[in-house]
Amino acid sequence: MTDNERIPSALPPERPGPGLLLARALRLKCPRCGNSRLFRRWYSMHSRCDRCQFRFEREPGYYLGATYVNYGLTAVLLIVSYLLLHKGLGLSNQDLSLVLPLICILFPLAIFRHARALWLALDCQFDSSVLQDDTE
Image (cartoon, rainbow, N blue to C red):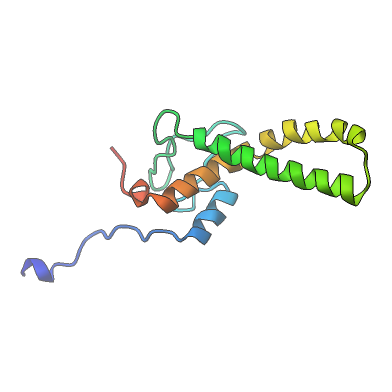
């Protein structure tokens, strides 16, 4: 049998598309296989996927980008909330000064996990080497 006739024993896994990566991020699942959970507890991540051994903690400071995702989502929610409450419902700025700071504090804490999952999904989408086998 020649080299051209050999059947590869293990083909690399198919790269997930952006929709699938987004769905896995929203469900807080591994971006490579979609089976294992990213988080052990509310703010504590697993270091690797239980099924495919994909490394979640890529390098020190890796999730700094998730802070920008979190900040961006919070800013959008804050602007939309202000416009809806001030222009739509007619609440005064003084009334909103009680509500909007709560959004700025509670919303980032609530979406912390999803911001990290979205950052990991974005990295997998734009850098295909991230999904390569890294079981060292």
